[in-house]
Length: 140
Image (cartoon, rainbow, N blue to C red; front, side, top):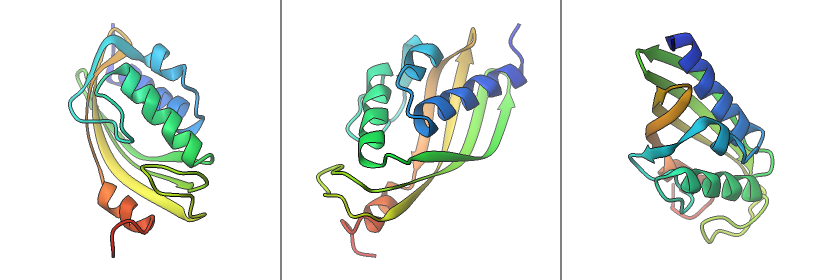
């Protein structure tokens, strides 16, 4: 039987694996076959498992030291909310922006639904405007 603690562990391990360690196999391990993101994972990704794999590849290529700092995990039933700040140094082209060498931060909030030990849904909001400002694409 799943518990809120085991669901929190699934989410934490997924985020650590894909976004902090850059392990693309975390997509296969933690996202269910029928996974759906109710918004884009960003970086040109589609709202499915492959979109998250693509986003992970793009992030790691452009920001090799990318990591996600977990501030809070809150769970109730099969839902887990995550508040985080991700950061990394811009070392290669991303979204048409050549490497700047700048360290950027991206705060955000995700809500995941977990079923049978795997993530089946995600809703998320990240401050992408702030990221674009930090990269110099949008004026401050």
